[in-house]
Length: 460
Ligand code: HEM
Image 1: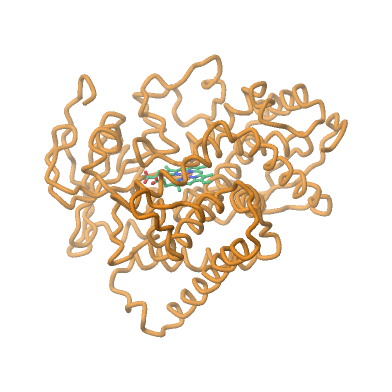
Image 2: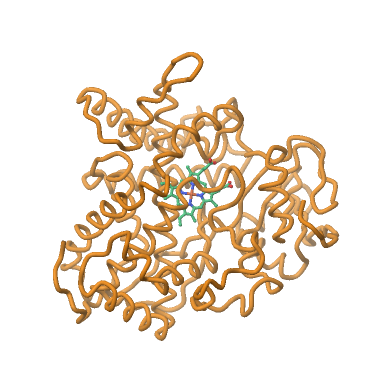
């Protein structure tokens, strides 16, 4: 347990209406509900969502208790017998499974993301980045949606590094299918009174056809790899070769599908959103942008970056870390209590629904100076947040992000690769965050791609 726990008094957030409680307000403005309520009422809050009570905890000690110390008592909310929420799409993959299945699959998947593999991954990331950026020539000087561009880029990175395939020809269909299915999932969480999935409503039919496309893509990928018998040393090989230590059985097709789709989905949207916010922050902070460009020019001298270069790009890394602080792609993580327990001395009943407010932790005035300001400098010279669990963009404990090293290389690497060629300028008024699966810029971010006069010596 943390050494000296402050005492917490839970506050019932005012404004609950009969029957529905705060459900309507959550549906309309989820981020505002989470952050404004926290600012007004404190670090331990209770909301009513219909018949359920939701506990929101926004203090590092409470985050540590839930995610680390009591990780076995606070588990993921999904039940494979009754898939709901994101599990309707991802099935029982690494992000949604629990217990022995999760443990075994995490053991299989984790080695692909080991630090020692990141240098090779970085080369592949840079190659993919280079190819896509080369195609931007015809976009120069026009407004583009930077969020959309980053999605396409990171989807291609994850496809090439984890599955050794290009998604270029399917990108639009894949992204459409993912958008449709995520919208369906968010709607169904917000509207528990909807008709069941088997009723052929237009919404249900659209969802089913999106899922058919995603299934077809993944099963096709598995079949191609099995047919060719080729070895790439990638995630797909590891998944196909995994054998149960006791029974010798491999993963079933359904398990393979769930894990592959989980990595595709979890491995690109979060990083793309983080990159989009980073470009926005740089565009709105000219001094930081100038320092970033200066560092990139000095270190790369026009070359394509590699993993080794990242050591010499501390400001670029700091920019990415600070962007993850202000706009964490996962603004909350969700758990449910498996038993009666306490958190910060507060009793919680079995089945209690809990949110750890990552967005709030990252802007908590007790743990950050100038919490709402973009100050990459705070990450330099080893100056980390004084309190360990005040910064959790990748979560914490056993369920922390498996892709943390991957994303921590990919983010700064792509920033440097793009920043050496382009100056990204904001082409719209203010941008608002919206909590839709991840913390996204509402309506996208229009930016101008302005070619720079940087010393481009050679392109690899
Ligand atoms: C900036 C980029 C990223 C952010 C901010 C991020 C954030 C997170 C967070 C907060 C969690 C924990 C969720 C929880 O505790 O409920 C998580 C889990 C996960 N992430 Fe990431 N992630 C990023 C990139 C990636 C990448 C690149 C991959 C894969 C290549 C990935 C794959 C996963 C998976 C599979 C899990 C579930 C792990 C488990 O439960 O064992 N993520 N991520």
